[in-house]
Length: 266
Ligand code: DGL
Image (cartoon, rainbow, N blue to C red; front, side, top):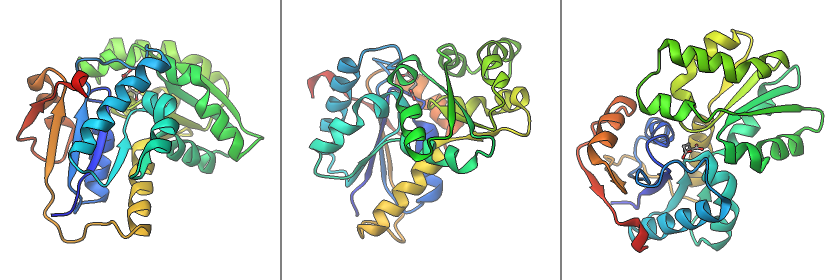
């Protein structure tokens, strides 16, 4: 059997990226690690996120993965460059694919980015978008309460609508026509966000673009699996039951086994 794709996130959010990988690369084996014991990363320092990410990469490498997807915007923002520079296998993140798509979508040249505090503070989306098109204005907004709302399953709820209004009113005032959902949890709030922003605003889900980029990368390097019955493995640092019930709602496949890893030992 061909080597797997390693996918990791600070917790369950990266399952929205795994879902796209499973859909677009149906012959690939996937090993997913969710750092459920140490989530959230979005409020932590670069040093801490880098340390955690390196431990996870060491764990995934023990599984002989052939490529790694950092399915977490915060870890992509704060750790991707260093990890990719040290890695013998290809490593991609979710920020650049999402930013590229937003630049392709915008006509008004006003792009909104919503993400965790750490991702917004890193300025990575703004820098990368403006390196692609200097005429674009980027409005960023951290929406920290979206993550717990998703984790509590409040995808359609009055409280969620209130928070969407509160966080996005500023962005709406900028006449953006593309809004990057720059945090793995936010695609699960696409409905309330779309309702609030209106039909003229394209919601950019970096997960979709990341899976596309992964496919191109594997094809170009002759690493693509063809006609393989895929195998999916799930690992977490804590809370198997909560992870499993979330994964069953998000993924198009049955999550049969989830294992706990002592990630601090890597
Ligand atoms: N996975 C994180 C991200 O995409 C969101 C959750 C967290 O703060 O760890 O930025």
